[in-house]
Each structure stands twice: as C-alpha cells, then as structure tokens.
Length: 218
Image 1 (cartoon, rainbow, N blue to C red):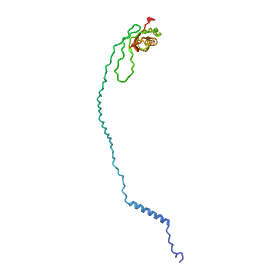
Image 2: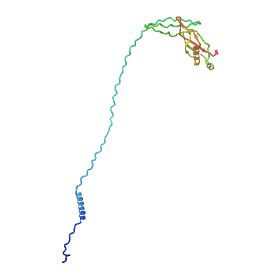
Image 3: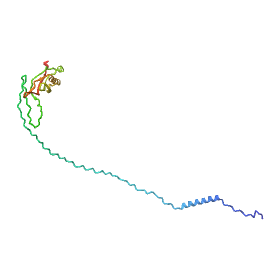
Image 4: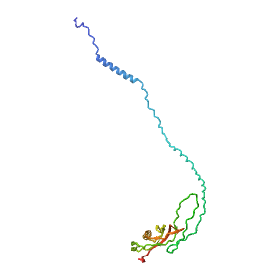
C-alpha cells in the first residue's frame, strides 16, 4: 500500500465572508418577522370640536336724564324814589326893542332855580328873538344862475352879544343844496345883527332869517 492511499483527507475551513452574509440575512428576516407579528397601535385621530358661533349684540348706553329746567324768578322791581319838584318862579316876558324899529320876539329870562346850598355858575341858554340885521349884498352862485335855480332858504342864526353870527343852521331848505350852503356861508361871513338885551345886558339869541334867491333880481 502506497503512502498516497493511506493519507487522511484534510477538513475544509469555513469562509468567514459567507458566514457574515448569512448571519446578516438571518437577522434581517428575524427583524422583519418580529415587526410583522407585532400588533399595531391604534391610530389617534384628532378630535374635531364642534364649530361654535359667537353672537355679539351691541347694547346702547342709556341716555343721561336732562337736568330739570331752572326757573329764574324775576326780582321785584325796586320802588323808584320820585324827586321833589320845587316850583320855579316864572318872570313875565321882557319885550326887547331893536334899533331899526322892529320889535323883537319876547325874551324869556332864565328861570330861577332853587338854591341847593352849593354855589354854582350857570350860563343862560340863548333866547329866541326877532333881531334887526344889516345884510351884505347877496351873491348869486354862478352854477345856480346857469342852471336857473331859485328859491328861499330859512336860516336859524345864533347871534352873540356883539351882534355877530356864530352859528347858522338850515331851518327850511330852498330845495337846492347849492343855494342853502351859499346862504349859510354869506350870513356867517358878512351879516351883522342887533344883539338881544336882557336886564340891560346883551345876550346870545337865536333868530330866524329868510334868504331869497330870485332870478328876476339879476
């Protein structure tokens, strides 16, 4: 017998790569099996709440109560004390003659006021009188001549103690302002009067003087 036939056959060694691959395959299959047989947990569904509607209602605030009207009672009128009236002594009118023979209107002297114990200085008001006067030649306004204006204006003249006119007012118009103003200016500028007399002294007086503008005179 040869040595070849008597040799004992050698044992084959396992392949580590194949062992590792086989082990991984077994592990994966085992894991899949475990997952497959594991009972599933019940799925949690979110609870759906019912839709709630909110109703808002506006409530108006109560209006304030107006205060009661205030009644104002009028005060009773105070009694008015009536002043005592002392009778005034009235003197008879004095007739003032003029130098040209005209009779002036009655001159009423100032009334005598009752004495109050305090001396006061009063100026007598001008009297109303008909006074003699000396007039300057009347000048007819050129515009009035061209427009054929004519008429009579009545003037109220205040004459001082020297017979000079110091104020002239138009008592009654001639109907034309041009004639009225011309008459007033001419009386103030060139006319002279005999002053009124009272108790032997010249006093201021009002006199009415007519001034006529007539085209036939020119």
